[in-house]
Length: 235
Image (cartoon, rainbow, N blue to C red; front, side):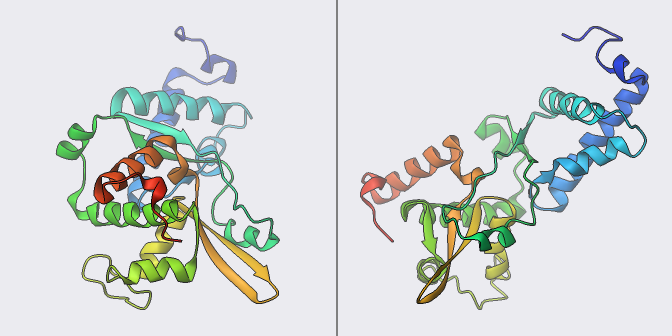
């Protein structure tokens, strides 16, 4: 445990200043998560909240860690740093697909039991995106973690979801809903060139590769098809 006066004292700031910075970072995280539908928050954004008035180079990391502890103890959220995955292709064009997100970024994950979260926290107005995310990630996972764009739309079309549909009764613009999964880092794009031309693939990104999510999807899919998901081939 940190003793009073230790830790932040090395930065020549008062406890009140430290607490104010921590609160500001927490507010920013919660607001930005809600505003951007859970898209990752760049570490650079959080650091700038601190460095706009303080110049100690180690202070941002300290404040972010303090905010992480407070989010967990007070709000029941884990502030998780994403370990960025890269597309399996070595095609350099992938870099253009990755420019929107900093290599170091954060998302918040609820630490509440599933039944408590569903009863008191879950927003029924966004549950449709949760279902869409589950469906798309499941398709890509069952295809081996990577699927051509045309093939993905083929499976979505069979469920009544069309790329050209800009006014779906639940999802609205379906193509934008799929793009949101890229921004949220459930999927990433990988453009592969060959003598026949270029093919765009969708591949699982770091949030979909987390063991808890991956195992949960396998369990649900196995229950639905009533056989081991490893035997299912939709590629």
